[in-house]
Image (cartoon, rainbow, N blue to C red; front, side):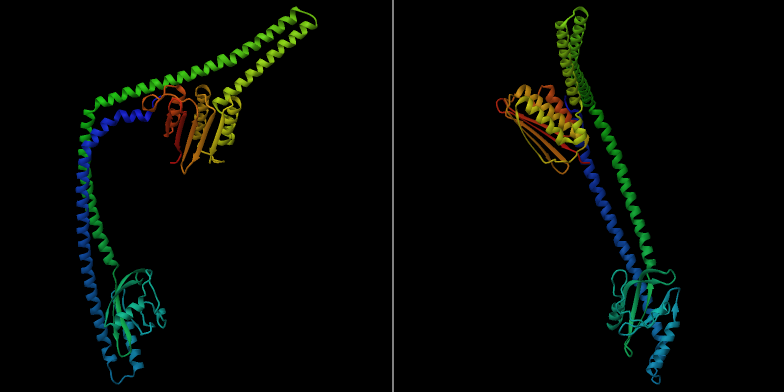
Length: 465
């Protein structure tokens, strides 16, 4: 029987080629234009965002410089007072800066040159602690970097710090200078989470505009594709009808195969079990007739003989029933797996026919999906039947090799071989049945043979996702 997927592919191949020939250039142009436009829009949007963010940061930096200048002015009368001792001047400076705040979260901080916190109004628990090795969540050495900026004559540094009004860690930009007489670092900072929010809003608007552009192009392209597809279908109705005819022919052949298989099974029952049962019935009836008509030892011996023949015939019928049952579904395959089932089948075949069998496999105790196992078993079973009936072989080589998600079955004999039909086909029901079984599970089935050189079958099945 011809494979279903092959017919489907053959039936629609011309239609698919024509549609692809019409659609591919259109799709390539549309995709190229869309990608270029999206790239340019995103690039322009990022440039605008960077300019906006830079302007906001420049504004924040100017604001921080003004705050530090005010702080320096506020402590200048103490810091530069010639009559105050260093200890008293430092105490007054700390007090001024501790009380000098601005806005909701604005304050000033002071550290000495070793990293000890001297002034921190929002977190007084830090005062007196050496924070030289303090890091933020990104591994940024906060105090060390701030001290370095101060030693360089003043500068900015960006890091993460807890925002007092929220109680959460936010990005912060600080500006610091050095009080050279005491080697103190004075600075203040502004939280720039508002910049991040504004940048996020702008980025969201840019992304929205890009998405709208993309969807517009997508809708236009989809409409054009639908139009071209409809036109292509209209021009290929004939090929579609041809595919339908081939599918109907496939269904008819499949039904014929089913009828043939059922007919063969019917012959098995009629010519095997039925005849044996008739023989048993005849022997028993003959024995009963002799018992009713004759007397004596001779008649008794004849009755025993006829009953014995009936028993033997009945035993043959039982064996025949078992054979047919085994052919329908071997129990050892369900209970023990593929390898024991194959071993049992091969041993029985070799003992019955005298044909030597060389089995090599790496499947061991592995279990495969049920459909894979029964398909491989049936292929081997049918192949052995063909070899016994037609090949005149003395040796069969059988290989079952397991890969990651595939199994390859190879059966090779040294028999007489046969002439393949065109395209590697064969007219025998057995070969067509094997091919159909394998290809029904998405596998591949190949036959290599020629008169006088034996036959080799390969069945490759995949059981992954």
